[in-house]
Image 1 (cartoon, one colour):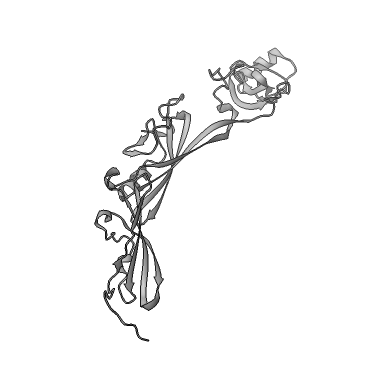
Image 2 (cartoon, rainbow, N blue to C red):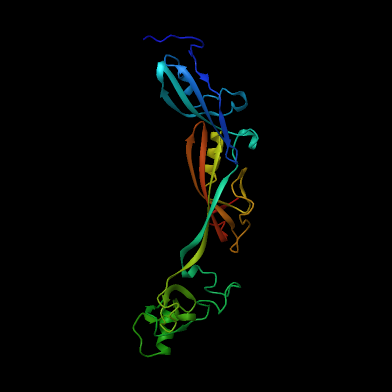
Length: 292
């Protein structure tokens, strides 16, 4: 039986009742609209980047669409729209949506804040200290200068030419010279908590965040800020850390938060920028990292 058409011929897509829009709380608006159209109609309105036909949400653009071929040569389109709320940063950028990961990571023992001098957070004295004595517990090391060699000949008649005993500090910490120099390791087994150890666990904090922006220039600006450290919540005009995140200058003189990763993908007509920030209590020293 041939189809008999009455009423609207659906030559162009007709929006169906029940359009739904969701704000994720950070300014990203996602909407779902349903259209019906004769199968001979145009689907050009489904192209990515086409504006939503509802005036109040025309700032949202087509992200993706699903097509259902119904009976009687009618096509149903379910279309997803995405945009930035006009009340959030003037519709240019969402607020940062952030999570924090806190744990422990392995660091070389010589980077410990209590290694050479006493740190107020620790008890029992510095791990290695600054005063060293020669000991047979450590390996022989090269004599650095002729003067050192002469001193060794005077001090002890039994000496291996060009070699001398290494120097020991607190807890069996062994160095190649009386002034410290290269750290060899912990060589005294009477200190089992340190003997043979080379690393320790220290706190690590990383933040993972995402923002959406309508502007390519903002993406390029964030890429330019990669590997820079700040003492505030912001990098330039980008507020990337929440109010509860620790900020400031570290004990070592550098800003404590480093923008360590920036990844970008296209999301509808927006740019989705995923970033990572690394926190350091000591700070990211300005001689090594750009502090802004």
